[in-house]
Image 1 (spheres, rainbow, N blue to C red):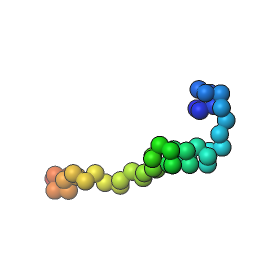
Image 2 (cartoon, one colour):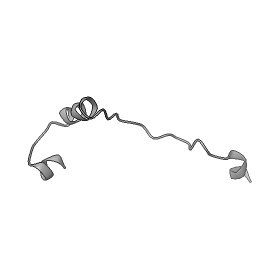
Image 3 (tube, rainbow, N blue to C red):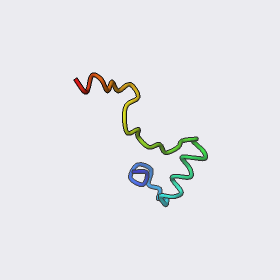
Image 4 (cartoon, one colour):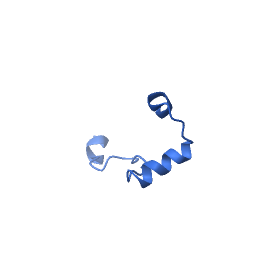
Length: 44
């Protein structure tokens, strides 16, 4: 996507470092269950 938009090629690992260090972004894993999940309502 970066190469198509800006005509600049970066190695994928370098992109990850730029996002993390310069932009303060971090990769996050999705939660397995919603916190507000109502187990009783689901059982009914």
